[in-house]
Length: 446
Image 1 (cartoon, rainbow, N blue to C red):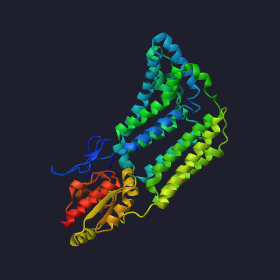
Image 2 (tube, rainbow, N blue to C red; image 1 turned 30 degrees about the horizontal axis):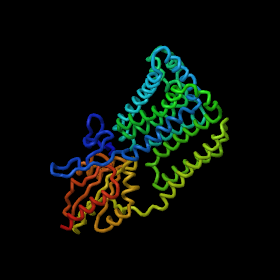
Image 3 (cartoon, rainbow, N blue to C red; image 1 turned 60 degrees about the horizontal axis):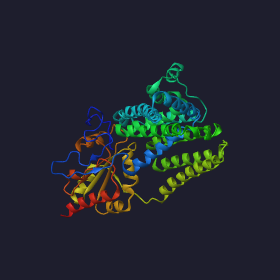
Image 4 (spheres, rainbow, N blue to C red; image 1 turned 90 degrees about the vertical axis):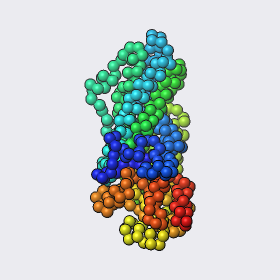
């Protein structure tokens, strides 16, 4: 999904999205093409397997939140509540589903609300101070999960959320207010996730992310309510729940490193993320001495530690073995004039370091060996970096080429005319990008 620009001469619709962008949905690659132009669709910010794996990870994270010190002690209370209500008010399954729907309603509303700020957030993320502030806020929340301070809500709000109501409404109300009761553990993680969703700018993704989180959080309680006779077989509370809370803290530190990436060089960004993963693995796997009354806990600790260290190795290794990328040149009118005089096609990439699909293009498509080889064979490759506003020349180009968001990749033929049917406004994998280059080159040869 392209991110709208902060330039004042760029059109936005009333919701803050560019006119060719539907929040979270595939966008056309030719937003201003004529009626005869070809149009295709490309993935949004999260689509295909990326969406599946992301939601799966969030679902697992939601289940893990049940193991924190704020939620785990509520499990027996919640299960006994379901059991008592089933005799008085009807089906146990109905109560369990209402509980999950109440939980999902609260969290999904938060997710959609955060995502609808995406137009404003996209412009704000051009400001380094905003990125630094977000990262520091996430680290501050992480320190709460590490136990350095405690997040507390007003007593009056907690008292209202803890009230018990009869019947199906009582079950639904419990689901609605679980986030308030368990805020000391859930709050920092949920707030960090809200910040991430706001940066995505998609209401659909905001809903999907928090609905999935709610399912992960509520499903174990639902299952235990169905089989309440098994409650005595649950592990007893202990130090292991503090360990789970610290695990969530490291997730927030990783999100902080993700937000700070645009301010770092590519190598520094990779090393920062790898360092966070390595530190998390060592701390959670071996440095932290938490114990549990069940034997499998030590194996879980070791597995989590090895997994985090594996992530650090993969991040660093993939960066080290990656080949050279496209040799971009800085924009100049003389460069365009020379390309027209020598009858060379031109590709101009409008991008920004804070733009996720822009980084995906750089890291995958523009480092693909075939794309790099073709770019060196008769193409003029120009990069226009819109990370920071205020460059008068770049603002002129944004207006001239009707650039309404980043990324935008423009293809210009040998006669100096843009091929609007090839224009790209989102991430595109290497193979279809090569096809566009071949299309442009074939027109050049004709």
